[in-house]
Length: 303
Ligand SMILES: Nc1nc2c(ncn2[C@@H]2O[C@H](COP(=O)(O)OP(=O)(O)OP(=O)(O)O)[C@@H](O)[C@H]2O)c(=O)[nH]1
Ligand SMILES: [Mg+2]
Image (tube, rainbow, N blue to C red; front, side, top):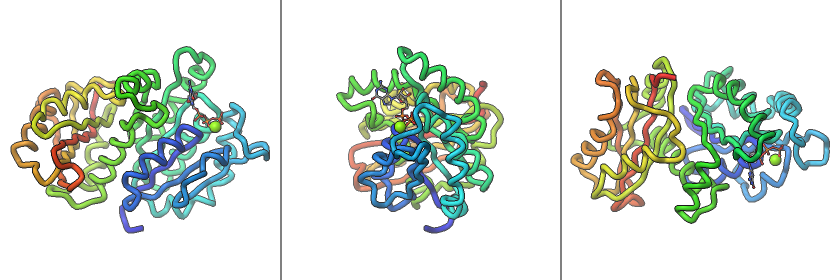
C-alpha cells in the first residue's frame, strides 16, 4: 500500500457487512479491516484484516455489552497498529444498538485519531421499535461523533424505507453506502480529470461546525435530478444550507463534458453559503457511461 492509504473498516455484524460490500467496489484502492466478536462476520473476505474480539471465548458475539467490546478492542490494538500507521484516512462503519459496534467503533476511531488519521464514520441508528437498542445507540453516539472528523448518522428506518422503494435489501445499505464509499475512495485515490486529494479533504473538514457526506447517482442528461437524488438520500440527515466548505467530486463516463460538470456543481452549490469555500474534482471512467455521480463533503454546517 502506498502513501495516503485508505482503510475501510467495519465493526460489529452490520458494520462488517457494510464495509465488505463497500470494499468490493474499490478493493484495489483501499484496505479492509473487519472487527467483530462473531467470527461469521469474517467469512468470505479473504483480503480482509480481521480482528476477533472474543469476549467470552465462544466466538459468538459480545452479548450486548458495549463496555466489554471496547475493552477487548483495546486489548487487540497491537494487532492492527501497523495497519493504522500506514493509513491516512480511516472509514469506520457500525450499526449501533448491539454490543460490539456500539462499544468498539468509537474506540477504533480514537485509536485512528491517535495515529493522525482522518476519520470518517458511518453510524447506523436502530429502529424506533427497538427501544433498548435505540437507548444504547443514543448513549454511544456523542462519543463516536466526537472521536470522528465526520460522522454520518444513518437512520435504519429511513434506509429500510428507501430500500423498499428500490426493492433492495436495507441490511446491505441498498447500494447507498457502497456508492458513498466508492465515490469517496475513488475521489481520493485515483487521478481524475481534476484531481482531489487528502489535503483537500483536510482543508474542508477543518471548517468549524458540523460536516456531512452526500452522494447521488443519476442520468447524464439530467444533472439537476442527480442533485435532487443526492439531497434526498437516506444518508444525508443534515440541513446543508449556509454551509461554509464543500468538496465536490463529479464522476461520469467518457461522455461527461464540462457542461455537465458545471451544471451539476452549480445546481448543488446554489444551496450553500455565498462565501462557501468550494473545491471541485471530476473523474471519468468507462463504467459510468450515461451516468453522473455526485459525491460531496459539506462542512461548516450550523449544528
Ligand atoms: N430489525 C433488525 N435490526 C437489525 C438487524 N441486524 C442489525 N440490526 C440493527 O443493527 C444494530 C447493530 O446490529 P449488529 O451490527 O448486528 O450488532 P453488533 O455490533 O454485532 O453487536 P453484538 O452482536 O450485540 O455484539 C442493532 O441495534 C439493530 O438495531 C436485523 O436483521 N433486523
Ligand atoms: Mg454481532
